[in-house]
Image (tube, rainbow, N blue to C red):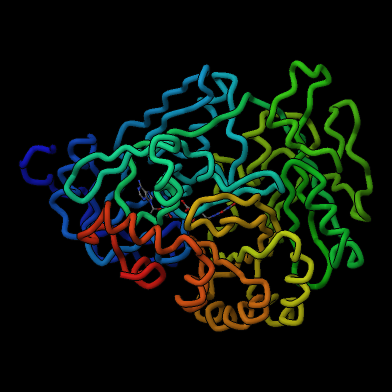
Length: 452
Ligand SMILES: Cc1cc2nc3c(=O)[nH]c(=O)nc-3n(C[C@H](O)[C@H](O)[C@H](O)COP(=O)(O)OP(=O)(O)OC[C@H]3O[C@@H](n4cnc5c(N)ncnc54)[C@H](O)[C@@H]3O)c2cc1C
């Protein structure tokens, strides 16, 4: 049990804004403990409290009407177990930092989001994903979790030992407690080559061609502007060593079709009618390509190719809002076609849209729960009122595809519609009753979408 001494003064009186400047986290205070014991005391003394990660969500998922806590001042612990192929990591560690440490041990994460700047706990809590038909959301790699619960106690949960509840514990929108450590599955280090292809023609973008492109490498993103063509294909293909003994499971997941996995074979100049770019590009028009990861086709460590953005630079635009909807993988071309008539209304508000894929998982609140998915994504200009006015029309167009919104991005779907897509929601609510009966970790967003 934590000691009964009073919680220390918070370091900052007011939490401030999200990374994008579009979410005000609330009045605070914002606590920044330097030790685990301090964190336990703060939580035990709070009536209501929410944890902040690196503040990259665009929705109000992390906001609080009361206290907030950041784990950014806690030690950045990373404990690698090479034999078990796991890593135990402090919750606030960023994926970019973690990937470098794993590389020193000859290990890697199987996948990453588009940016390495986000925290492991924050990304796991919202279902953050990369891209790849065989790649699950990052939270699916979590095998154990330590949570500080309302009384300040630490509860440890494990994928095997707590199998009946673990599916609800990791991707939990911060509603069960403050995660302090997560243990992740990792894979042997592997290399990836990245190339960008430009101008995917309409006849490819609109049908089976898009399916083939998305299936054509370990991780694929297609950027477009709702004009019926694909502006950029970012193809990230795993390098598979010739010697079968050296093949890694991660590299084998590159799949049998698509771009060559043998580094001696160059990527083709034309791919599904799109032409190979001869200079680095940025997914957002007008921004320089050198802010992004290597696009020359040179093999490099997976953590230097799988994210789009480099850790040392600002990712994306910054002046932006994002929205993203999960639809069934098999219906992505149809779903895009359904939204296409809104193109003229979307484009003036848009930096860029991206199509990605993510494999199904069994996490109860995962937007990819039980369903191989494809993502209909928007990086909007920072014009929140106009974006929110247009979203209901996009959501109506996507309705036949049962869209599940990304928890960390902006959407306007009503709570009943959102809840109907989560068959394990009642199980989650029971788990929440057990772990947080006092609703210490609730906020308006969680109440709205998961119930009070
Ligand atoms: C430029 C940019 C690119 C992006 N690219 C992608 C992408 O490729 N794929 C994708 O899926 N998303 C992407 N996102 C969205 C982003 O990855 C998610 O919103 C993610 O949750 C952000 O993590 P964070 O550490 O910033 O968490 P925050 O936004 O700070 O918090 C998110 C949630 O996690 C909870 N949380 C944080 N820490 C803890 C903790 N210790 N214990 C319990 N709960 C906690 C918070 O309470 C909150 O509910 C992108 C965002 C930006 C700004």
